[in-house]
Amino acid sequence: MQGKNTDRLKTYTFKLNSLLAITQAINENLSKDELLSRYESILKNDLNIGKILVFINSERWEQVLTSGFPDDYKHSILVEQDLLCFSEITFVTTLQNELLAPFDIIMPVYNNNKPLAFILIGDIEEEGEGISPTIKHLHFIQTLSSIIIVAIENIRLFQESIRQIAMKKELELASKMQNMLIPSNDTLPKNDKLHITAFYHPHLDVGGDYYDVIPLSNKEIGFCIADVSGKGISAAILMSNFQANLRALFTAGVTLESLVEKLNLSVINNAKGEKFITLFIGKYNYFSRELEYINAAHNAPIYYDAEDKKIVYLSEGCVGMGMLDDIPFIKRGSIQIKKNSKILCFTDGLVEMMDDYLVDNANDIIEKHISNEQSVKENIDAIIEYQKILSGNEKIFDDITMLGVQFF
Image 1 (tube, rainbow, N blue to C red):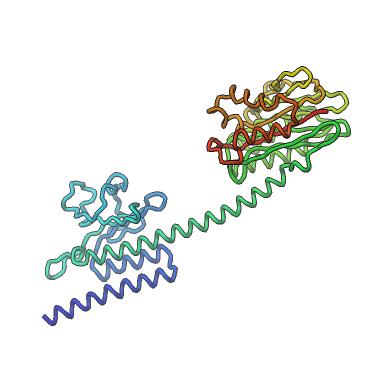
Image 2 (cartoon, rainbow, N blue to C red; image 1 turned 180 degrees about the horizontal axis):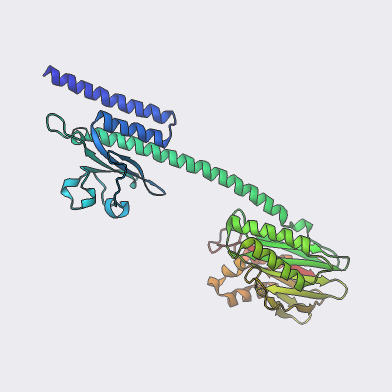
């Protein structure tokens, strides 16, 4: 009896020391691989468990430990197909799955009802009394496994948190840089010939929308609005590159046709066919009151003729930038601007959130907001309020940009 008590005491002491050692290793911030190595050593060297297979759910199921098998051992076990059905410790002898035959027990590890790991274990040999070490130490193995797997999950979550923080900081920096490229309302022209105002609301920290206003000479001014296909960092990078090219190429001497061809070539070279840009670009002459424009597959801006009280859509143009290597044709539009008239340019993020994405009805809503004697700034403010753009409209899933021009 005394011998059994001594053996039992040794076993308890071993288990306690093992758990303390693992806890200390976790507190020392050891890596996932180091923790798995210590886990394997306890199971294999101290408990005589000969076969160990561990799958961990780290965004996808990954086999992280294979012990007790030949180097060329391969299996066809699929967690989703073969293991996800188990929520409790299960003896393999009761199963019909031949893939699981090399093992004795399937041990799932769950946390908050989420499967974190599946541990498959089998013996080298039974102990002298014929009791499997797996069964004899089952509760200890379960406790040890849970501690190790939860620790590894915490390591993953911590690393993911660090990655998210770094990404957030990068996005904040990218957002600041992008905002520096987009003119603020305070810098837009407001004189006795015209007033220009804008609204820019990226759906994410960075966006693929863009607008710009470029003085060309003492008698001409250029303006544009553009939208990159897609969202996020890649769209923002392409748009930043596009902005640099536009600013370099848009001069008083260049024709809009030539400008669009050069911009198209730039987008082709930079986007490699993966993205395209829709664009509306115009050149206005203060003295002749003529607006020349090209609409490259963009939402047609709405011109409100204040004298005749009518609406005109500015749709003449060509395909979007980067859609084709060579633009097959470009049709330049021209319109004579009347006094007190207005133009509202916008990206498709505004249209798509309106009236369950019915474009015609959305345009009707915009027409109603611009067909009045209010300033174009008041029109834009009214649209923002009507559509609850700044107060939690759940239909918003894209960048929203508006550029308004009022002529005197």
